[in-house]
Every structure is written in structure tokens, then in C-alpha cells.
Image (cartoon, rainbow over all chains, first blue to last red):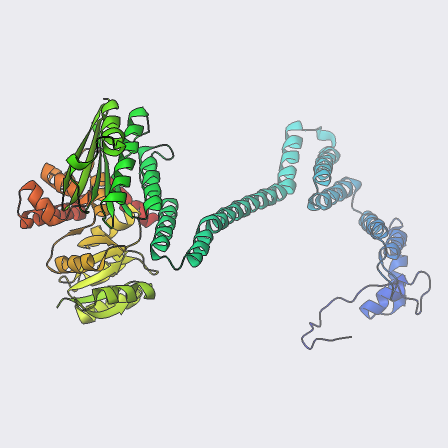
Length: 370
Length: 209
């Protein structure tokens, strides 16, 4: 046996039935040994208790059932519960023997039972406990109302108070537990979302970066795309009409162009509107302008500014590239003529192009219906 | 040469800025937190502080709040990867002379530091976008002097948002570069002094967090 030097001296000894020096079931001898008193004294106590409506007999039987034999495994749970019940009965009998009236003892017993049942925290038992508590209160009031008759108001308020006292803590604890559970669940879900996000995007990108380390342009594009994605998640655009808005569509178009052509698109926008047929036209035209700038201008960056005013939507796509001669563009080249000018005209807007050796800017404007 | 203090909690980023600014400015000190930065700046009294918007112990505005009362001559340029408008607006309102994103090129950063040292306002396209958004008509202005941008100021900001440099803006609007700078400084002043609902709302929301 290992003994800790810090063991507290006040630990209660384990109560057992002992073979050594037993007279009947070894109960008195066991109690005497555990409490370090003469077993005869214990036996005498039991005997005296028999005088109190036979409480001593019930107590002895209860103790015999509840206590395990020394050096043996614990007795079965069922047996112990029966033992405790008998001990409780002995307690009641002893109280009666002391002269307490039935009108106090039985409600008290019922109340105690109710508390034990409710503390079990199991649905059925709790309900049963509540029922028992009601019976206890009614019994108490009925018994003690005496000749004055039963005051129903008093009775029902007593029941209500008793139920509150008994069930209140239980309901409170239940609510707290449910709350804690919910918080934990939400937190877990958030964690899972975060993990999924990190896995799907950041880890994937890092893996790609390692594989493509020999191509700086590709690595820069990957980093840029990842940055954009992370940003839009961390800092959703202020006032953005969420998914399906002009802001989100332009963001997506810029990201696509960046990825396709490996040129960063610096996007600034103010305001947002929902996308309809006309707004979609301006998004597509802007995308084409961004792609042209990224593909042909030779600039290291494309600047895009989207301004949603009350009466007009304007998109500016600018690069500091080499510029070009608009007249030298072959007439059948689809880009500017069809994808930008034609599209804007059909949507009821305008497209203007300024180009010089210092760079090119495409200006798209669309009046908003008032 | 302009004397610069660098405040950022990422060593790697500080090293990058140091090598980019290289011989163009003199980096006299570096700090990684508000607690380190405030005494350092008070002692060194630099021309410009390059200030990260996000710091572990209080953010860029805490540094400005700690330094400005004693060293009004020190100018701050906010530097951030953050896209959150309220973070940027808050540092500007605390007293920074401008805001640039961390993706800025070395040459542009050197230029921005010089302009900050000269007392000019430095607006990146992104900051111009935020300001246009915040000053968009909507709530009724309480103080028209401070709560509304003039058409000219709006025009200048829109060109900045479109990616134009001051010189290009001047040429396009037939103004001198000095006049463009005056307009931008006026906008900065409004940004710092205006009580426009959108601006105070941003500030208030930040303080709650």
C-alpha cells in the first residue's frame, strides 16, 4: 500500500461488515472498528433504537444490505439502494419515535424523495420527483390545516413555491448547460470553417508555390490571388450588396484577369448596385478592357476604379503601358469594337478610349434609371 | 536626408522596407510595438514615422496619440495590408498624413516619405476610394465647411482613385502640382476634423471591438 505523506487525518474510514468478532451480521463490529469504539456500544444503540417504533431493526437490516463485506468487492447497486431505503425508513421511524407527528414526517419523507429523484437529472425521474414534491406539499398543507378547513389558495401557492424551490435550480442548470453546449457547438463550427478555409485555399496555394518556385511570375500570381481571396473573406467590402452585386462581379472579373494574364489589377471602388442586364454589360466590358490592358500594354499593373454615383455608374480601366494606335487595330478585331463599345452602346451607355505612349485609359459610363 | 523611424511588428517586412528605402532616406530606428515605438520616437525626433496600422498592443493610432502631444513636428505615414476602411480612416483621423498599401513599390514609397516629410498628404488610390465613400452625399452635413467635399476636391480624389499621380492630375485639370497638393491637404483636414456621421460611426464601431 502506498501512503502519501500529506494524507489528511480526517478521512472517513470505509465502513464494512467484518468477520472478526461479529455477533450477527458483522455490522456492529464493522461500525465499531471503523469508528474505533466498542462494538457493544454500537449494538446497544441499535437495541435502543428498536424501541423507537422498531427503527433499530430497520436500521440494522439497511446497514447489513448497504455495507459490503470486508476485503470483498462492493455489493450490487440494487442491494445498496434497498439498504439506503431501509436506512431512510429507520430514520423516519426514529423521528416518529421521538414524538414528531405523522403530519410532519410523511411530507418530509416525500420531499426528500423528490429531491433525490430530481437530483438524478434524468428526465423521467425528474418528472416523478416533481409529482412527489406536489404530493408532499399538498399532504403537508392538508394534514396541518386542521379544523380551519383547507385554504385552496394557500395550498396552491405552497405547491407553486415548493415546485419553484425544487425545480428552479434544476431548470437553471439545464439552461446553463444548453447554453454552454450551444456556444461550444458554434465555436467548433467556426473552427471547422476556418480550418476548411485554410486548407482549401492557403495550404493549396503554398503547395503550388513550392512546386512552381522556379517561375517567379507564376508564384507572384498565386500569392496575389491568395491575398485577394483572403482579403475579401477577412474584410468584406463596406456596403457591398453581397453576392450578385456590381462590386462582387467586378472583384471576380479582376481576379480572373489577374490569374489569366499574371498582371496585378489594383481595384478601387465606391458604392454598389445589384446586377441587372445593363450593369452586367458594364462588368463584361470592364473585364475586356482589363484583359486588353494586361495582355497588350506591357504595363506591370492595371488600375481600375468603379464609382457608383446616384445617377451614373462609371468604370475606369487604366494602364501605364505603351499605348497603341487605334487606327492600326484591324477592323475585325473583336475586342474594343464589339466587346467594349458595342456592348456599352446596347446597354445604353458609352465607352471612351484615350491612349498615348504614357498609357491607355478606358472610360465606361452607364446612366442609372432614376 | 530624411530621418525615418519604422514601426511594424513583422521583422521580415521591416527588413524589406529597409532594403527598399536603402540610401534614399536614413532609417534611424525601428520598433515592433506601441510600447517600444513611443519612447523611441520621442527620443529620436525623426522627420517621418512609417507606421503599421495594426500593432499587437494598440494599433497605429496609439503611437500617434502617444507622440503627437510632445512632438507635433513628427509626421506619420500609415502603411498597411489591411483593406478595412475603418482601420485606415481611424489612423488618419488620429493624425497620420497619409496611407499607402504594403504592395507599394520602393520608388513610390521613397516619394511618399518625402512628401509626408514636406507636410503634404499622401493618398493611395485605395484611401481616395474610402474617402469618396465616406463623404458620399447621404446624411445631411452638420458643418458644410468640413462635412462636404468641393467639386474640385472630389474630382482630384476620383483621379487619384483611378491611379493618376499628382503631376498627371495637374496636367489633366490644368492646375499646378502645388494646387493639387493643396486640394488633397484640404481633404485630409476635413477627414481629420469632420464629424460626418459615417466617419464617427466607423470610429465608434472600432472602439467597441
